[in-house]
Structures are given as C-alpha cells and as structure tokens.
Image (tube, rainbow, N blue to C red; front, side):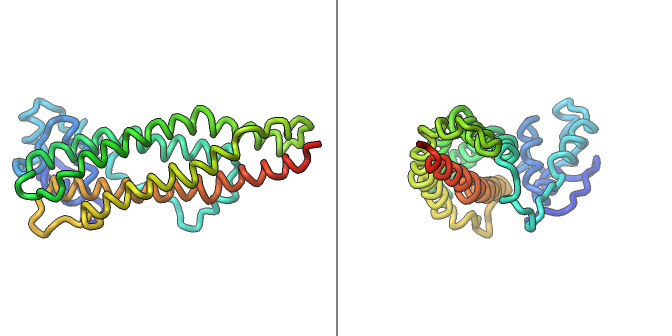
Length: 251
C-alpha cells in the first residue's frame, strides 16, 4: 500500500481509494462513510446515501492525498532559531494535535471489534492513550515556556546585548531533562508500539481498517522521528551552546 497518485472520480470504489492511500480514510470517517467491509460502493453512491455533495467530498479527498515533501538535502542547521521553532510548532506540534484524536478513535474502534481475532492488540489503545496524555502537556510546556525562552536568548545573543547573560537562568536544566527523560520516554512509547504491531506490519489477512491503523501509527512514528531530531540534535544544541557562551561572559 504505497503512497502514489490517486485518481478520484464518481465511480471510484470507497474501499479502493483507501487501499491506494490510507489518508483518504480520514475524510470517510469524518462523514461516516464505511471504507472497510461495507465500503465496496462507488463514491457517488456512498455520498448519495449520506446526502453528501460528491464534489465537496472529492475536493477534500484530493486535498488530503496531496504529497508535500521536504528534500533530504534540506540544511536544517542553517535555519534561524525563530524559523525552526515556528516550523516545529506549525508542522510537528500541529500534526500531533490534529491527528492523535482521529488515530486513537480509529484504533479503539478497530481493536474493540477485533478483540477475539487479534488479542495481542489489546494493549494498543491503552498505550496510545497514555502516550497522548503524557505528550500533550510536554508540547504545551515547550510552546509556552521553553520555546519563547529560547527565542529570547537567541535574539539577545545575536544582537550582542549587554543584558544577554542575565537572561540565562532556567533553560539548560529543562532542556537536558527533556533530552534525557521526556524524549527517552517518547522513544520508549514508540518502541512499545512497534513491538505490539510487529513494526506496523499487519497479517496477510488483515482488513482495510487494520491496515489503516498500522499505517497511521507508522506515519506517527516517522513524524516523531524527525520532530525529535530537529529538537534534540539542532534546536536544543544551539540553545545550550548559546547559554554556555553567555554564561562565560557573565562577570
């Protein structure tokens, strides 16, 4: 089930669209259109049953399957601190806030209806719930405390302000704690998800809902991998280095 260009027209079968690109499942779930066992209907028919405008649904489907990629040669280290933080918030934090609710709902629905067939997935909803409950306060802490502080330090450092060293007070310890504790915890949660799902590999006889859940989890894993890399290896390294230089200037 590789991502590729998807042709969406009135006669496209709902289930085929999801097979071609699992992201279309979000649109179908939004409008209550069955894309699994009962999804073998043409899109136009499925929309008519739900009294939906087919053109509107097709537009949303086309929007969600659009692939936007960043080149692997992108030099993230050259980005300014402000731009990097804004990118983390608007891309990675927004991704988690927007997608976790749908992911959790999809997992709960699937596991609850397949408990007997796949008992080994019984811990999956609990693991994802715990992951969300621990992660969201972490994101809020970054956006409200850590990131504004890093921006403040960066501005003072770059402007060579005389008061810059006075700003260095609480950042270094929280960053080190996040790198050692919170980020380690995220990695441990991801490892648990990988083990529960056999590295997001569904069995050969898995239904579409099963495959969609695993692909969504793989997408989450991939997104968090870059998220943690940008924070741990670039942003926090820059912040700690600026702190050290500013502290060395303090009289």
